[in-house]
Length: 472
Image (tube, rainbow, N blue to C red; front, side, top):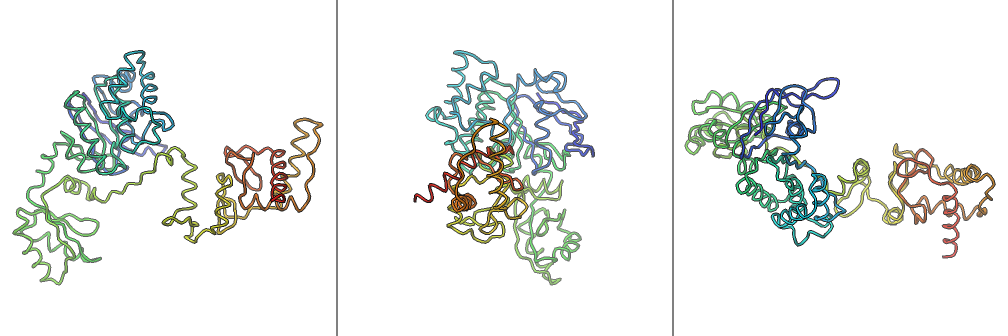
C-alpha cells in the first residue's frame, strides 16, 4: 500500500537533511507506527507521503500512485489528520463535516448520509450542532479524524493523533483507530512519540531518530532483539563514569548503555544478577541511588539504537485558541505569564492590581507590554506621552485636511481635559470607538495590522473621554 525507496528531504541553502535515505513498506490493512522524538523527521515523512511536501530524492508510492507524478490520485485515496487540529472552532461539528465533504466533491443526500454516519461512528451526534470551541480535546480530535474519512479513503495518515490528550481520551481514540482498521479495513500510517501508543496499536513499528530509520519490525520482534532483562541504575552526579568500566567488564553484563541520569545494563536474568551487581559496585565504593528491573520495552530498543530514552521527551501543547492566535500569542506569552492565578511581569514581579485592571480594559496588543506598572514599547523604552499627545492633536488636523480639504477642525479641548484624557489612555481606560486591537509603534498609535489609527477619531475619543471623566 505504501512503498518508500531512498527518501531524502532537505531544507534551505545548507541542504540539511530532515529525512535521510528512508526505505520501508507498509502492507494493505496494516497499522504502521513511526516512533521517534520531536524533530526526528516523522511529520516530514508524513507530509511527503501525503503530497504536502515534494521529496528531494527517492521514490514514494501510495496505493500504487507516485506522490510526485500522480499526486491528485494519491490525494483521492488518502485521509490526512495533521498534528494540530484542522477544524474550524467557530463552526459546529456538522458544519465542519459538510464543508470538508464539499471539498471532497461530495454532494446532496450522499454527503448528508456520510456526515450522519461519521457523527454516529465517533459518538458526536448529540453535539453535532454545537460550536466546536465547546468540544473537549478528545471530541475535537475525533471530529478531525471524521473529516478525513468522509470520502472512504484506503489509507489514513495520523500525525501525532493523541498529542496533548488526557489518558482516557487517548485510550478512547486508540479504540476508534483499531475499529477503523479491523472493521473498515483502513490502512493506518501513524506517527507518534508515545511508546505505549506504538506498542498497543501498531502491527509493525519503525523507529526513526535524526531523520534516519533505525529499525523496523513488530513490537515483539524489536523487543526480542534485546535478550534478557534490563536494569536501570541512577547515581549521584559524576559517579556513572566510575561505574561504567566496572559493569562493562563484568561477566553478567551483555550490554551497558549510557542514560541521561545513569546506566542501563542488559543481563540474562535480572532477579539473580541485581545482588551481584550491587555488591560489585559497593566493593569499589560506588553508591547506587536507584535500581529498576524490567523486561525489554520499545524504549530499551530506542535507547539501543539512539543512546537516548523516549521517556525524556517533553511535549508542549498550546490550547486551540493559542494556536489560532498565531504569532501574536507567542509574543504575548513571551512577555508575560501567570504565576498561579496572579499576572506577573517577565521578571516575576507582581503587576499592580489597580493598574492591571485598567490595562485589561484597554486595547493591549500591538508591540507593547507592561514593564512594572508602566506601558512601554516592545524594546522596553517608555512610551512618550507628550509625543502621543502632540501626534493626536497635529495628525488629526493634517488628516482632516487631506481627506476633505475644508473640513472644520474639531473643537479644542482644554489643556487639563486633554492631559486627563491622555492619562486615562495611557493607564488603559475604555477604548471607546478606538477598539480593534492596536499598539504603539515607536510613538505612533497603530492598528493591530500596523496601519495608522484615524487621528481625527483618536482626537475625538480623547475629548469625549475627558468630558466623560469630568462628568463623573
